[in-house]
Length: 476
Image (cartoon, rainbow, N blue to C red; front, side, top):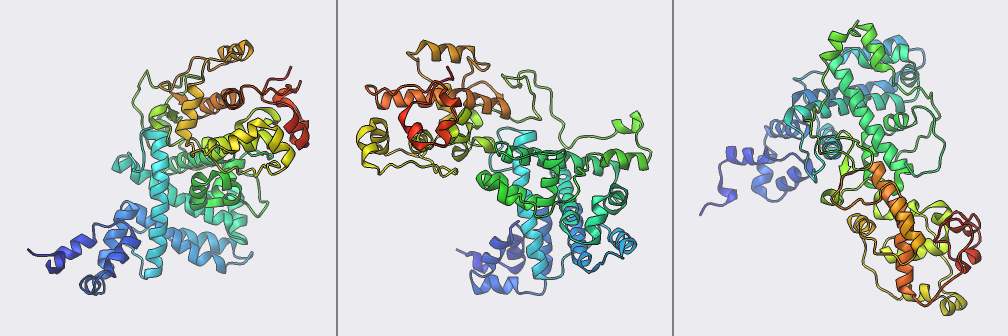
């Protein structure tokens, strides 16, 4: 029986062309001498070009990626006196659909960016197209091409933003930014760019939602552009490190570029109602009357969740982030927070801890002794959300009344909720869930309730007070 190694070269070429990832491509090429000879043949770059086009999503996307790399190569040479020359040289670099990378180093850069865009497209598909998207995008080929094209062009705008010197100055001013960046794009192109940029802003907002920091108008857009697609993806995958991934080292203009679409349309006399109707969003969703958020009636375009897709929750509902949804100052109570993190089986990103080795605490605190002696498996986001929906019957009438009168009373795991309503559900119920866990862990032990409950400020700064009273209760 013939083996893979005995196939004719043209068949092996076709097999190489099936890849859309450079690392896999090179691994196969180095796996044996037969494959290495195919790879090392003079037509290797022809194969690489085909693979790269597939990875990027077509000639148009490749042209945008090539232009970004071309601009990236020339802008470091300009001084503050070269403003006019920058505009001329950048505008001279067009998106050439016949161009190709010429070195393996360039191919590696393009493949890396292609992989980042592919991963972001999966997130975009989950957000805007199909909430059942898991590891593969469900965008149509046309939708995918428009999304990828817009994202590669945004990579270029972010490059201008991060570059020091004259290019950054030109990009910070709308009068020069519009000709610098938008001059070669159609009205639909500009619309797509800002549609995708709005979506990136939403991802940054979600990653930083619970961080205590001052916001200014355009904050998220500024972060999205300055960080660039690669770091926005890292922030989505590691929301607990979002501040590091989205860090902006320079305090630049707070111009949010929100007005760019209008400025471009004015410059091209496109603000008539007829011309505006010609613009189409990347994704046109069918009208599904039953597909709305149970809590606030938000429709698709906002992502909707129920038990069917809880394994891909909002960033702020990842297990390691859930502790920040404890109400009031309870989230800063090192005693309660540490025990809850242990019970959920998660690593607390806040780093809260209490003196678990103190002999007095170990001997007198039955709750800590029982929970710390218990081996707990890691609870994922879906299990935590299910626990919020499965709260048992509570003996305390006050707590029952609290749940019955909350805005999300009656919601089940089958009901669709948008991201903000899902967060509200956990905020409303996490402390009640934790109270029930504590009562089952130490049914005979009762600590006196702090009069201020979870709103007590002292629990955040005095461990002895946090330990000595129960703060998992409302402010009375």
